[in-house]
Length: 485
Ligand code: GLA
Image 1: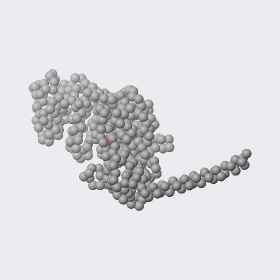
Image 2 (image 1 turned 180 degrees about the vertical axis):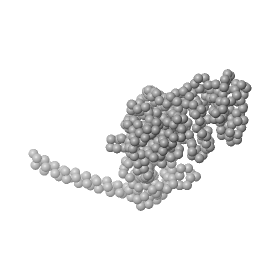
Image 3 (image 1 turned 135 degrees about the horizontal axis):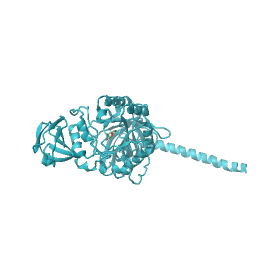
Image 4 (image 1 turned 90 degrees about the horizontal axis):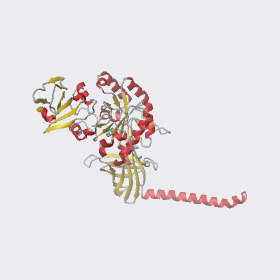
């Protein structure tokens, strides 16, 4: 039986082997013919190592058919499809686009193949100087977008009971960006403790993007070289009576191109809890490559559930730039606060556009759930300085949790009021102009009929409330703040 089988099967096997080999040769030679004919075809990577042991890669997955180039480009949190091309390996231009909520994003690259190098240039804006990049061949599939996991069905996430007043603290991004490290965070914790800010209520020390490493074989998120031991860091921050915050994205990548929580939400929430994390800022970024804006609530709900399931009280801060009217659904997905706009910059214009833009959103703020107009820009040089003031902070932290609203406006001058617990009212008289000015505050215009006493909170002085109006002298770009009882 056996013999027979061998005798019969041998020629067949040999034949098959030959066929396979031949086919292999054919495939290989077809491949190289293809490569020399359409040499741009393939996966190309631009590798930019960061100093923390991670690297920021851009992938060009190209298919060339003569004078036509198609494929995709993946740059940190963006994934573009090539929409137009001209030229070939000797010199080409590609234009690639992606949908990002209501925005159509577009990138353009010029390139040519020189030996093994794909030499490229790109510009952020047509008027910018070009940035040069060099890509090398990368293994097929490297840098490919992961398979999309469908969003879960919506349900209401239980309120975690945290942030009954707006959380106050420090965040690394606007000052340190990618330079934040363990030593910086420790020194901030030291300073908040020694300069009175902790007593004033600044409790959260929040590490923004760029702490992330990759994942281990079990999928556990790792820190990069800048943060050798997150648990030890949390212990240190806690030993100062402060709390530690961290950052991630629901997408495969964060905004700075680091590892996101995509597909690892529960696991990451558990890791944060094990490290002793008290606050998570969760930034849409890389999620835009896989999900539409309409899917945001379900995607944010996933991490809301995961944080609750971790068993540790972790403040949940949504960062998706105010899209899809987040204030309407933020609380339902477990959010304690939600960014209402794009990123603040260190300028008066940016700060005031955001600050005064919160007026319409007042009705959505309440204990446990806050509009987040982004971080303060302090010490970065673009604006003037004002000291921390306990009486002003008390207005921010008032337990009634009502947001201030504009009640009067004339040119550059605006008056905003905020009801406080115990029946008092905070009154802020703003001067958005550059020069000092006098603003007449008519109490009746503000609906403040009965007045026992009032105090100027920045000057820490009582002011007269007997006459029907009060004349406030307001510095340029400044405010006079009163508390009226
Ligand atoms: C986005 C956020 C910023 C910051 C960066 C980090 O731009 O809006 O606040 O977190 O990402 O990459």
